[in-house]
Image 1 (cartoon, rainbow, N blue to C red):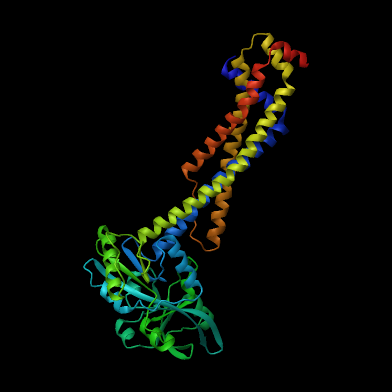
Image 2 (image 1 turned 60 degrees about the horizontal axis):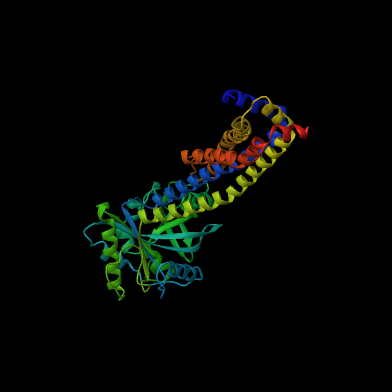
Length: 429
């Protein structure tokens, strides 16, 4: 029987049993739509995280931050450090002197140091618990933040412990409403600070709301508010990005020398350390690679879960095809009696199975894309820089799954139908 005739026969059988066909297609639609949503959401999350990492600096930046020393190397040590810092353990060995020593490296073009604290900020009867971000003057040149009104503080003001501050847009609205805050004084903790600027709106990134913080000179925050001498992190801009890994390794060497820490035996590059290090040096490229690996692993995990729904849909197809074979046994016998071959019967039922899954796959892709768009729209409305993307590999994977399950779960019922002899099939009537 010609393939076109077989296809017409299969489509006619599907039309005759619309409810059964629709329910079978629905099972495939749900599974395929889930595949598209997982791929789209994975790509959206990946781009969101990459964009937020880039917002802290481009690929020409590397970061030095404090870390709890550990006797364990690699992942276990990193976990121990994160746990200890979450419990309130502080590392006080990283200082502005360390930052200035690293800035002497020939490939380091600029840098800024930073420390974060939380204090009550008040003006007249208005008060708010807010994050205080102490930074050096070069922060405004290296970061993507911008001053909308007024100005940022100078290096001279930082070194002279000037009591000046720049407010984020949200805290400005909270404390001053529509009035101009420039030149007015707010109390941070127990100390008064003169407002010299207001930052342009930037939004929240990786849980850090730049619009709801107060910026001030880092030395002022250290000496007049917190009473400390250390910093929590420093960002460095390199001149030649091709040498950023070498520069990061030189920074590790300087910090180990400054902190009287042992150097690793043999060539040791990257963010692996001796376990004794009380700091971590990581480039923005490394951060992106790490987060890309994490989001990729999460996507694969979700796909494995989605595969379960696809298998369930495939089993549904197989069960339906078994019912179809049983109902049409007499028809099969009649076809064989008038000359239909094994391959004719086989292809008739396979085409029916594959058509159901391909139709479900196409509809599932459309449903998945529409759902992904709604997710992206909702995330954007919430303030996240979420991009609507349906990756080509997601569509190919979805259609591949549809074709595979249609073939795999339709094959056995089709073979069972094709192996019936005319006598066996007509006897069933």
